[in-house]
Image 1: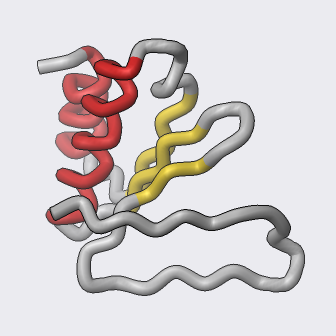
Image 2: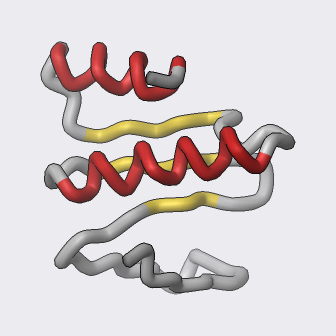
Length: 82
């Protein structure tokens, strides 16, 4: 279990439904992938999770939708995890 996964477990035990992970993409690809796996796991259980760094926000959706209003500018990339 990674330190991020342990922190998420604590949050789940305390009843949190939304998770924001800051600094989880900081330079090591293996850590970034592990943190993406964490947000996917949360999404599969019906929770909302974001992995946030300086330039990007990662999220995972399972049978869900996401909307952006006109104030959002930039790029969006969509990938299938499975």
